[in-house]
Amino acid sequence: MKIEQIYTGCLAQGAYYIESEGEAAVIDPLREVQPYINKAQRNNATIKYVFETHFHADFVSGHIDLSQKTGAPIVYGPNAVTGFDAHVAKDGEEFQLGKVKIKVLHTPGHTMESTCYLLIDENGQEKALFSGDTLFIGDVGRPDLAQKSDLTINDLAGFLFDSLRNKVMTLPDDVIVYPAHGAGSACGKNMSKETTDTLGNQKQTNYALRADMSKEQFIKEVTDGLSKPPQYFPQNVMMNKQGYESIDVVMNRAAQALSPEAFEAAANETGAVLLDTRNAQVFNKGFVPNSTNIGLNGQFAPWVGALIPDLKQEILLITEKGQEEETITRLARVGYDFVIGYLDGGFESWEASGKEIDTVESIDATEFATRLASEEAPLVIDVRRPGEFSAEHVDGAINLPLDYIDENLSEFPKDKPFYIHCAGGYRSMIASSILKARGIENFIDINGGFGAIQKAGIKTTDFVCPSTLKK
Image (cartoon, rainbow, N blue to C red; front, top):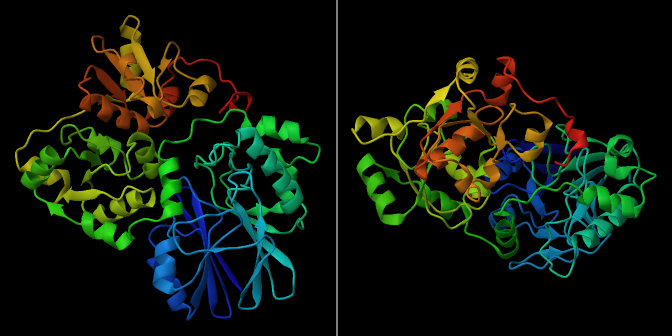
């Protein structure tokens, strides 16, 4: 028997490949499915099942393509209603995979179709739980993402409490928990950086599994401090539920290398978003005017999802040379299927053509400290999330989170210079590019963000432990 966790850091997502006696199953596959097929072929195995723990909100699963390419049925738990052929399993139903079995444990709460899959070895021992978004390491799934309007968040939290107590916590302590997400995912609020653990240890350390916790306490703690879910989540749910174009079609449509002239013409004719995925401190030195910087080296897909509301928005790419296919793939993972081309040769070709470029003024924290000391009442805007800002921030700074930059655009002054920063420089450059595209240019970015600011000895507020704050 083989269990392999295939973890994708930019989505904080775990897919799973399980194999026994030449038969394989894949749980919650990513959109690009060829790696799973190649893995099975290398092992002389046949993919027998594609298991889905629920209708994912934060990424588009590869279940449909993988099923079509291998003939393996798609399996959901009870309550799932799909726009494509799928096997909707009964609670307790078992699937034979070589010498092992995979048992369905219906665990509603995160969503009503949410299901865990229990791996039972050839000796009948319960060995592993693929817990989806029901149970994370250090947290449980948020109960506010289900698409049924007749259920409240408290109703779903109550279902989740029952699912955990009656289906999950009754399993042996040595069962290994394999969740669908880790730290960085928006599907929970307190997830660990660890991506596996024993159930017994989670009973000891996970706040939501406390033995003395009443249902009322659970509902209060699980629903408290939830941030607003990214706006693309409902659209991803519908794609996962109703179906989508093959990844092959998406990739072929996007693979259009455009000269600077053709790129400029496409931008003018289509109204496409110009998305520049280079590193922030490369972008700031020169970029195509009106382009938005969301670096591929950070939480790329979630930030694209948060800042480009329409999944059908046409997109033109500027990437580092050689990263075009990777960027298109990452966009497709969260449902952005309408990339219509990329700048051939990257920004260097645009610059070499003599076309207009734009820049963002960026200074280091030492220079920022010097300027703060010499300026009267300088304005500092911190684009981190409210919890980060509340924990500690530059004395006198104001908080305008990147997540809500469009709603807060009027709060950025147009007639007074200001400084802008985040935690490390990634988000502030995204904000800078958006402000530039909106005609706001009277600002200076702080390279290195709050981390560099602290090292430079700039006065900040007293630290408040984030655990005492709402996330």
